[in-house]
Image (cartoon, rainbow, N blue to C red):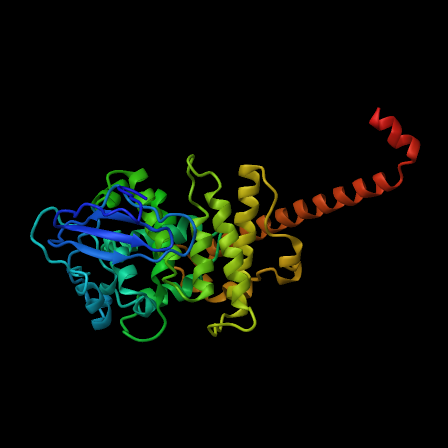
Length: 385
């Protein structure tokens, strides 16, 4: 782990004030993290959900959050339990420090449409760690508006993993109760739409450039998944599909790994017995599986690998129909009805291409098997020579 790792048996030097020691018991390691705005030394244990070390950011410029309030569209709910967890470690989601520079990001609790209940069950050490990494901060409301619009304009038409009508309904809602958007899904959406956001918006969010923005936004969403902040498998699968868009020369298989995670979470939705009851509509399951399939096939072409989703995972009779997009056609905030119909036709053409490729592969394998079974012993000997 970076920036500093030591063996658990050695006695580390006591760090200076403003430092967090993040311990990982599973790996018997600890990291020393300097957090702006923290004037005391804090020692916290960090749980790990995998054998791989938790990644760290080199740029912690978004750790300090401001308490700015926006219009009544995003009234912050009350979170005494979460606040007390952070106060126990000398941290706060609402850090009003006057020391420059202040981050343009705000606590996710500023937004009433974001689901915050999931984090209440996390250990306080994990909450403190996520806070220090900026995972619990979101851009200003005008920036989120742009990220959301770019996502539904550029990515969603060909990977419809989210229900656009439902998203806008929740996003624009002024109610403190009702359906919410998963923090993990929202962070993943912001990451996925980052390449299409204006550079001016990214700079206003505190990033150095587009590459820095993509890396930091990806790491935030990745940490939220690895620390299991989201309990619902459907939301985890949706976020994993969005993170398949991560491209890195240092880790070319990252997209394929997120396809694997999306498949695992999608299977858990209908797992029996299920730990959590998820009333996921059939149309949303179809959206999820077809999005996984399309991303899997795209990565197969780009990386020249075998597909992870085989015919045993889906049936061609379960194609998404125009009825599954009935509300979205009329309630989209980025396209009109006629444009949405045209885009849906393009999506259907993608499905047909996937079906044809799958059929050609199966036919080729059958012909190869038939040819091999008809070979005589003499033919085999000749081919060996």
